[in-house]
Image 1 (cartoon, rainbow, N blue to C red):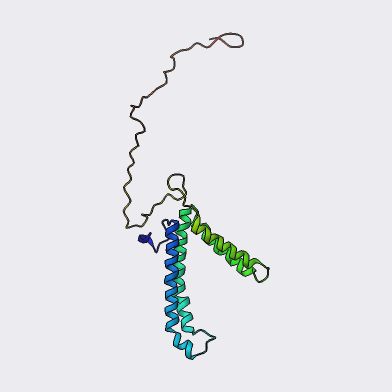
Image 2 (cartoon, rainbow, N blue to C red):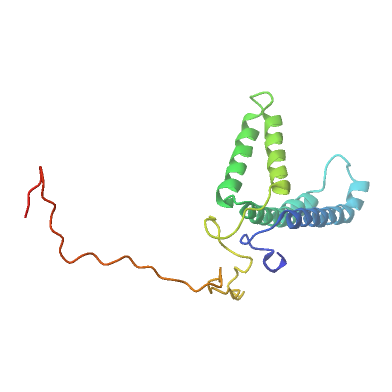
Length: 189
């Protein structure tokens, strides 16, 4: 997992996703805490109701893109491991949450539905089992997908199923000439 941490390709199991999400959350929490401590003198001596604009710029301009990149990369890897296509699921979930957010002031209870939907997707990412890999899978990739990673050596030799030598049975050759059956209703030759 760690060789391709910035990329959207590859797969990530349940435990890897859970631990990576915890580590990302802890890292972002430390960044926000460090920024808040750096701006604490401004908050102590100034107006406590308003956050300093420099802090908002750093939070939105530095911390949010880092968090968003890693979160989407981890989700794409986990969706791929579940057997779902991340090119459909991630934009679809963003579109549904955006529509629900825009319509929630007009429709009572829609914000709660959006919260349940997001919670359901989070539970799927945490607990959905991994899809089997191999033939028949829409994604037959491996962990080694980068251009600098060597392809793993796979033995393509057929496996021996039994020790008995193979016997080849061929059908008998067709006869050279067979007379047409003659009888009632058939034309004889």
